Each structure stands twice: as C-alpha cells, then as structure tokens.
Image 1 (cartoon, one colour):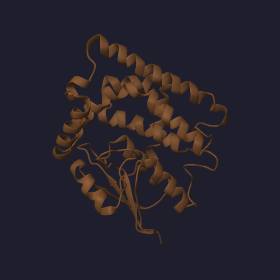
Image 2 (tube, one colour; image 1 turned 120 degrees about the vertical axis):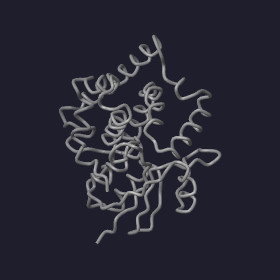
Image 3 (cartoon, one colour; image 1 turned 135 degrees about the horizontal axis):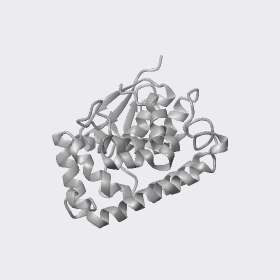
Image 4 (cartoon, helix red, strand yellow; image 1 turned 30 degrees about the vertical axis):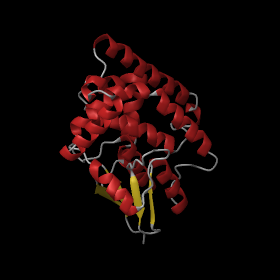
Length: 249
C-alpha cells in the first residue's frame, strides 16, 4: 500500500490556505496522478531550515543558496526533492502506472514552451506579486515583503504601475495572453490540451498561474474579471476543468 507523500506548501489566509503558483503545480500533479499525500504547511521563514534538515536542494544557480517550495518527501522511496518540474518528473518515474505529466518524447517541447510562457507573462508579476503579500500570515508577510522589496529596491506598493503606466502595462499582459491563446489554438484539432486529449505538465503550469491570479486578486477584482473574459473565457474555463485536481489533503 502506498504511504502518503509529504507535500510542503506555504499557507495563506484564504479559505483552503493554498494560493501560490508553483505550489499549485505540485498539488495539481499529485491529484492528477491520484497519489495519496498530506500537506505540511510551512511559513516562508521556516523553508530554509526545513530544506537543510530534509535535504532539499537550493534553487539552481542561486548564490547564496536559496531554498524554495514546493518540496516533497516520499516515504515509499525516501526521495526528498524540491522544484515543481523536478517533482513532476520524479512522480512519473516512481509511479509509472499513473497518468504521465511528461509523456515519452515531450520533455524538450514542454520545457521550451514553459520557458517562453514564463518570459511572455513577465508583465503580469508587477500586478500580482504586491497583492500576494496581503494574503499571507504575519510571519510570511514580513519575510515576503522584506525580501521582495530588497530585490526591487522599492516598496511593493511602488512596484504596481499606476495611472497611464498601469493602462500600458495591463495592455502588455492582455497581449501576452492573446499570443499564448494563439499558440494553443494551433493544436486544438488534436484535443483541448497542449499535447492533445490529456493534460500534461504544461497545462498544469498554465492552470496554476491562472488560479494563482484568481486567488490572489479575488474573483470580484477587475483584474481577474478581465483575465476571466479574455480569449473567449479560455482561462477561467481551464481552471474550472482543473477544479477536480485542487484537493487540499
């Protein structure tokens, strides 16, 4: 019998606690595969001590070492690892009888798409990162604000575009979603997902970002209402389709 995998996630003040884009990738992955798991809620200041204790590797290329979540510990194999894509690949190998996130021959294609997808949507982060701090518990809120403001060299409030700049930057966000929609439409004759009839890791990554935007801004915000209606409602429909993989365990 498979023992539950320990999944380390960062809590928010929202109902259900889950919120973060990269954490949703692993939660979706575990639920998509139907694997038992338990969530270990971990505040931002506790991530580095946890990682060092558990043997989770720091983010690639970080100097000094920077530890992040998601991470998992699998008691069935004693594997301990971080990074959502690495976790997805591990789950494919460790549990080959479950639906695959990286079907054979798709690794390079999916990783190239993910790199371009992330770069294309760079303009959205100035609108959503500052909002993220507002939904965190006090310990994580202080850490998140301090580290992000040091990175940007300004307050999180000043990161958000204002006035005419906000209009210009939001137009860039819409244009990015338009481009991604156009790419995905080229394969629609093969099925509703990136590789055809079944979801792959790319679909999980896209859905994770969309759900993160909805959770962080709130479904009544104008920003979310815009995204939800763009491209014929494609993005809101995607997370509706993925709702069955949102389980909080």
